[in-house]
Length: 140
Image 1 (cartoon, rainbow, N blue to C red):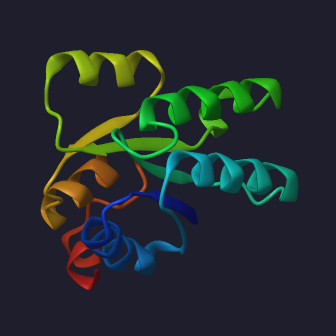
Image 2 (tube, rainbow, N blue to C red; image 1 turned 45 degrees about the horizontal axis):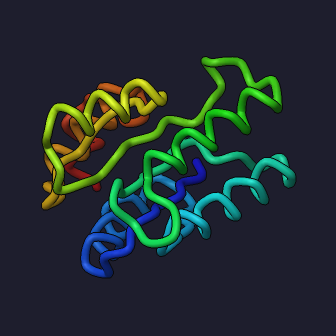
Image 3 (cartoon, one colour; image 1 turned 90 degrees about the vertical axis):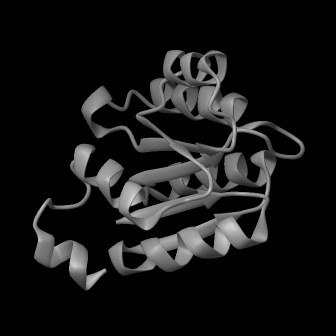
């Protein structure tokens, strides 16, 4: 599995990396522009991302605009809906407007900061990325 973690806060970026590295290759981006560059390169190389984490408030390009651009790129590449990457928005903003905006642009899940391991793994189980067996979760 290939994962892109886009987070401008060092501590959250490091935590997500630590929690996700057992699942596969993790690439890091510190802002929205770097995330888009990484995503474009992955599409060109045929090693697409399976899972993308996007912070909503980031420098240069915010997470929702990155989300919108990613979905447009997948559309242009004729990637069927079931083969598109799963995108989880990570943010301290729990307001209804941001949740609806992200959902309308095609995010698959929403994770409120601070990141809690149990909640992260629960979202991954719901998305079918992580098995729901307690043994697998314990190993992580």
